[in-house]
Image (cartoon, rainbow, N blue to C red):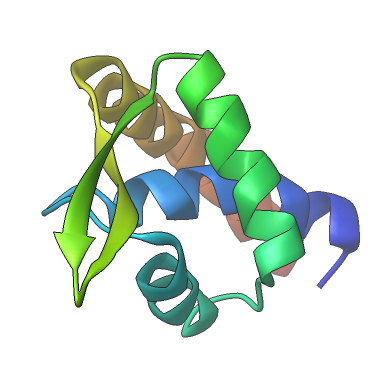
Length: 100
C-alpha cells in the first residue's frame, strides 16, 4: 500500500480501535496490526496528536504493580470516525469508477 495512503488511515484505525472500550498502546498495536502494520514508533506520535486534537483522553491505572496509560475516545473522536465514514463513501465512488 502507498505509504501516504496508509498514513491517512492510521489515525482513524486507532480511533476505531478505541470505539468500544479504552485501551493501552500494546493492545492498540495488536488490534490495528490485523488491518495495517503499525509499530510503537508510529503509534505513540499518533496517540499524542489525537490527544492534542481532543479526539482521545488518557488516564492511568495500576496493572500488575505498574502504572499503565490508557487511551479513551472522546465525543469529538467519535465524530471524527463519522466524518471518515462520509469520506469512505466518496472514496468508494472513486474506486468503483476506476475499477469499472
